[in-house]
Image (tube, rainbow, N blue to C red; front, side, top):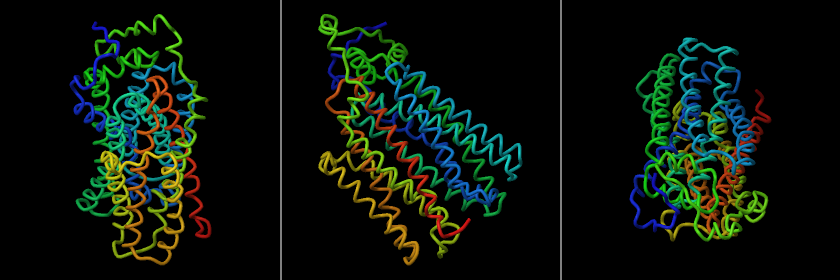
Length: 418
């Protein structure tokens, strides 16, 4: 085994673009299964017409995701990141496979039993997401900002990819229950294959890239215990810097509470971004936008536009002169997004589909842009173990924002009846 203390210059290391590609693919795998479940909700609405699946499945998913990430964040410093991420991707694979098996076993028939089974798999997706998203964001927070940006772009790409596939399957298959079911089966078959690919990429490719080994070794030399298994998988034996061996205080790190207090504005930023987004997407866009000339395509087009613009927004910060790094500027921009609530309400009531598509696109664009700005700015200036912990804390607030958002999403039903 080679020994590495993290002192080698990153500029001399190979694998940056390969690492960015792997991060992007792992980002897709993190939300591919869940986005597929969201994207085929017209199928679930068809077979479960009385259960509001577009809202219920999201509401089931979130408590499992939030509860799991809370436990993992609290114990972040003691958790083996490699086992955490591999468990998450393996759970995505098994849950996706079970959704597929459930549909095949019931021949696409509805009923409360089948719906409970689908909800159970939605909860499993939440547990898997908490393992992977927190684990990966924490792990990448002490590497180059381009890595975490690529992972976050992959999260959005999974939504854009599923939306594109859904539009293709809707055009390819007739709009009967059987046609919708064929599309759903195709989705989950592709997801099952892709989750296996993610397990293999994380287990055998990512830990062996030179630049990844460099940053993990650097974090280990600063006292991180979460990277040991990944370093071993890459053939690296960790060793402390000589000055750290002489002065153990160099290995001390800020507690989670101290990190949170120093970055409370970033945490609130993440919370508010997703409270606003999930109070509108996907439930409102799926059920409450009225009848328009696009007919059954309307909700799919809205969700597709959101996902594509979310993906575009996550690449804008790569242009340094367009990246917003001011903490005050980020807070003002995030608070300003809440003007979208009355905008969506009055557009749904009085506007035409063009205005709704424009608003939905802006919602996605700002969601992706602000997410990347916050998660790439916050970790700067901290040691590796602290950056890992801060990444987990911010994902906790992100998932907390999603939970509050999907709960508030039910308020759109007030006055409409069930």
